[in-house]
Length: 127
Image 1 (cartoon, rainbow, N blue to C red):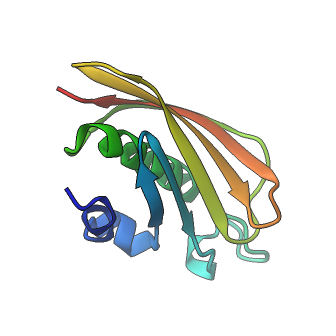
Image 2: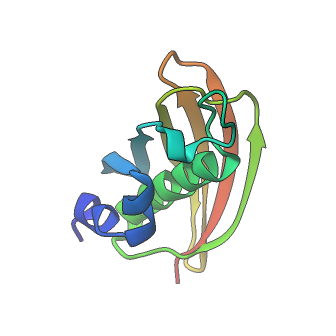
């Protein structure tokens, strides 16, 4: 499975501009360029929580797909927002568990200046 192509062709990720830049051996990275329409604040560009969540979920899924070579629907995702994202965002994800029924992935989301914005754990269907 061509992971980058799979995620590039995902309509929702494409709509938001999520780009998976690396996915191999249970690790994935990706980013999203911040723009006005992704902000929750009309006066200052600040990433809506859903944007941060979508980036974490997409990159987390890519990390697991890199291990099992098939799509993985999200079962559950928990996210802690640590700071507001005011510019481009990037995420790094690592598989914690890859079972026959479910996989678990930890994801960190950062601002372009390396400020830690969010901490997430996703659970995905693998079987």
